[in-house]
Length: 323
Image (cartoon, rainbow, N blue to C red; front, side, top):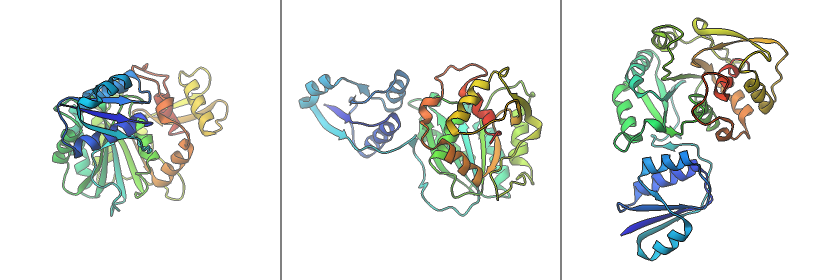
């Protein structure tokens, strides 16, 4: 027998959430057919098919198969969701003041980064939030596999609060903005953003050097002012740029400034961190949260592949340090 799932009036992320819950809570046959009455693009359909092993059919085909199906489920309630989560209870209160947000694209770096996080946790308990790109997942190595893998690599005084999957759009920036938009930063005073970036043009061992600065020193927490929005600029990787029409990211930064009602003076010079890894405080995240309120994060980032510079993700890399 076959199983049918009809999903009404939901966005892509909510579709993923509901599929995960239904497949987890019910005994399904090997043949699961899904019909949607809302649009998803080809990359999103490919993601759903790969992760959940389902087939899409048209409403007409659904009607033809209805009488032959063993289970027919209908989903029609809509919520605001951003990613599929297989987390521990993220609503629980936390006793720690520090959170680390890790975006994973290159899975081969997970163990090294977990080692750095473990060194940090030797003197400062922390909660860990992980977002993994959908291109990393396979039927065998799915999101549950990576949750278990990361749990096996982090020390016991680190709580993996959330393990989420996101589509490959906006690089490491969009998942971090979603983390803020979901207000997961709220219980913490200090938040560290890191990711598995592979670029080597900065120095041969730049990622390891970055981790040492941000996580491995015994005195790594910078003096973040808790009375105002504050972000820690790692001077070793700082680059100064001018906000002018000759800059390849000028249009992108201008677009973000317009979206968020930020006024940037003409020929303004700013310093940003290459690599987009930093510590910031809770008030800074509040500022970002207020700026992105009402912005559809799924719509502002270009689809992959994106150029080596000049995309909205690159504009955000610089914009973080303009605020």
